[in-house]
Length: 127
Image (tube, rainbow, N blue to C red):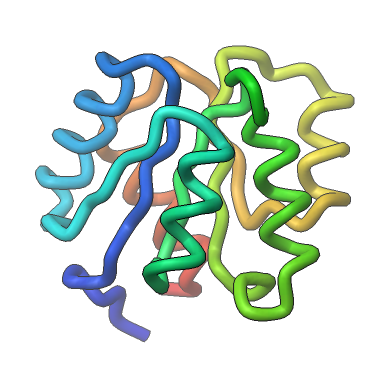
């Protein structure tokens, strides 16, 4: 299965620099349809208005964390199948297990490069 490079992707991070880095990595991989949100609340509102092909979210944000966003997305029947990749600076085993239980599709530990991001996206889409 080929990955749709035109699918809308939502990048969620409270750190503008990280959004820019992920956006640039996605651009290197050929993805140009990228939206951004600075926290889970804003991201969830955007997901109500637009269908995204992939969510890439940071874990640590206020007021709604990436983990809480993931739980909310998985609980919503319209969004439950949306592929979700969690990004975090912490590789705590309990976080990885909690995210997996909550339904995350993949998990990236910072720092990472375009190759890592490509591999994680490919794994999510079975490409």
